[in-house]
Image (spheres, rainbow, N blue to C red):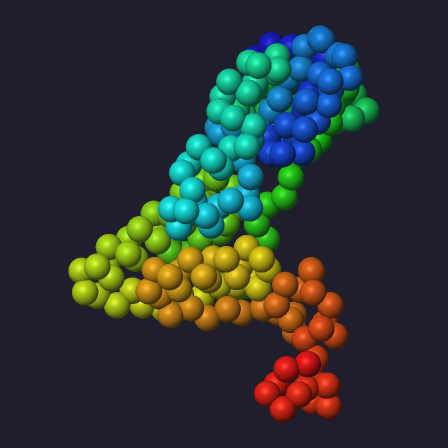
Length: 215
């Protein structure tokens, strides 16, 4: 595959990448702007995954920047479903998993985060789900819909295990619980919401409690 020359490149397709592209255009740049992403969807808000999975919001509301027209509206040449396999910032060389090779003048990496799996055997088994991307949310929704159908037919949905007591983990546990499943949450830290709540807030000092447990 022949090498192509690009001007400005954004690697990523979430809110950070979308806001970066908007800021570039807002600063007055009118040249070519190429965006590479390994997923085929418009910019997605991962915080809405549980709301979509529980049918609180429709699919369209998961994409705060709009659908595919977002790219056309802002003059972005989107290479969706094209994973960046290599990036050499010295040679200014970008390669993709499908064999594409590109030179570029400037590149911004705004690829976001991915689910982190602990080193526990069996997490690659069927029935083990993650929640980060829109595809993850779709898989969770399919599982929740199946649980609801199972319960409607008079069967017990069974038991579920959620690894992680972050905001997303607690939301997933709530969604599964509302679908009728008995849920257990496992968190390696001593508190729920470990990245948000100070550990001392989970400590209860009895002499601060009133007669009914009120502070």
